[in-house]
Length: 324
Image (cartoon, rainbow, N blue to C red; front, side, top):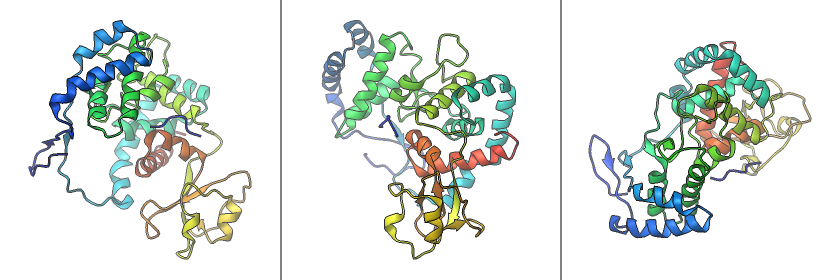
């Protein structure tokens, strides 16, 4: 599963501007190299000549390097909030007919799409403001191994060359993630979806397209609407470290046999048709989860266990508001 892969310091109360590892004077020379790479990847001269003169060195604002240690106990309540669940319900009811049709088409429960959306951009409250071409070209410029960033630049140029989007439409956050769904350019190019048949997959301002795109992306990773994402459990402290992590898969019977129980102490389900992993993002003393294939599908796009757990916990709060 998983087709999508995917500085200096200043002490200030306000944000500081990062300095790139490369001398900024080298950026024009870097763009010439990137221009050639784009041509080698099949981008036509007209697109290259139209876009490259507008690429600017993007200086990303960064918080001071002193960062608090993360904990799920503080992170999840701050992200998977009742306010976001209520906002999801309002959004769902405003577009219920369209959302239900798309959920049925892509076989993804609406609560997961809404939770993905809420954690990604707070349902569009956190806007995409920057040219993705400049952001990703600048990130490639500062990277020691720029293959991933270069791939995203070329993917954006292909969208423009194919007249699927204009450069002005391809707006991202400071990490180069597009629209309200916060998807990489490559992912958007693969599963960006026109949900209302108006000819555009507008993940910046059209809620129908945002919903359709997220649902399509999850479907592309094998989403199973007959299952949920996983469950919080309790595991014995004596459990071998070799069985902890996504790389180790076993059924409920195995996990029951090694002492894993539901969070309330009850026995695990007796289903034999599922393989799952035990994860502990905060270590043996932190929260523990058995995760299913749908969790893995979400992680193809969120990439970080904290973000995925925020999505699934928010989905549970949305479900409690009678949205499945």
